[in-house]
Image 1 (cartoon, one colour):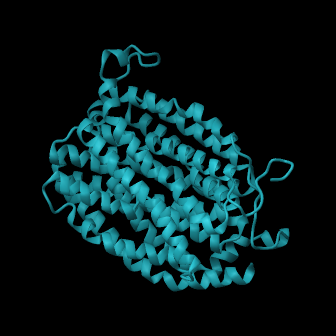
Image 2 (cartoon, helix red, strand yellow):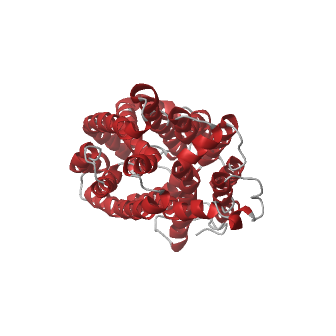
Image 3 (tube, helix red, strand yellow):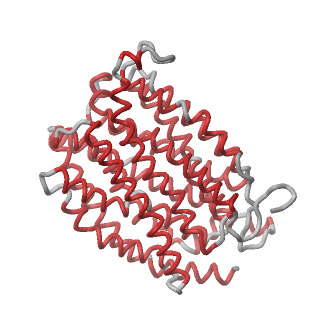
Length: 441
């Protein structure tokens, strides 16, 4: 520690791990705010007279638009200004926008508020990975990233575990009598209730010191100017392959996260209070796998497997591929849920591997911007395209809401196949990038 209270050195201190925990907690609530809507698709459709295509735009494409417009500028800000302040501002913004979503009375209003939620949430990933890269030593980097990324799966679990009871409570007279709930429909009350806690949690961003920025390149301003373009020109093959492969996996993950609750209701007749706890447990299992996988990658990397972040991920994809193909070919809820759990091992946590690669091969001055560029592409393709295609197929091709599973099957199958092939093609460019980074250290 320095006299100014800034984290320094390469040892993982208690303050560093507290920072990781705070980032994890904020990430949990960002996912709750994002996913709770997916458990209320049919009530919202009925309330606002929407179809599957329109509700798909509200759930997913709204976030893609937000990331497209603000993701990269947010990364630029994170690379240059105090990250804690940026994090605080983003949490306040998405929490207020979630609250306002509960007052939406039209499709346009709901879509606008969800875009604002997405804008606020653009801060969490680049801020977190930039902070972790500066606060944690290299031999614990993947584990620290994985711990933070567990927030996504844990947030999904919290959404499904609490969503059913919360939705049921929102329909009671007791909920209608709470402050700020007057005149609201049950789904609107839920949105208000999940948005308010973030207004308090945002202040946790100031509970840890700002880590000192560190880099493996010179701090000469002339050297820093144009650093991003030089990096992209040098490593364009690696960047292109990573964008394509991980975007495909993002498409699988966001498709499942967005539409599985609706699939459980329409195909198996399960209500949120039934499938919510089960899906929550499955998400917690997937979350636990992140830390285990992160430790394995760290061990493989330390033993000399320099392309471990992508090689291990491709192995994982190969292992779970039978579940990805077979989950929609069976007609029983419990085998479906088991396969859904397995497939999640390679969907939402993919950003852990991306962030680990960026921390190893990219200069400090462009890391957050580079992660934001990746996040922009992943969200635009994965979140903005994958779930929207499911809604479009259900509405315009099948014209049958109960065939939502068929639409999901094709998106998952095609995306998973392309993702695996391109992941393997990225191994050689990754090794070359690590060699260049080592020569610059």
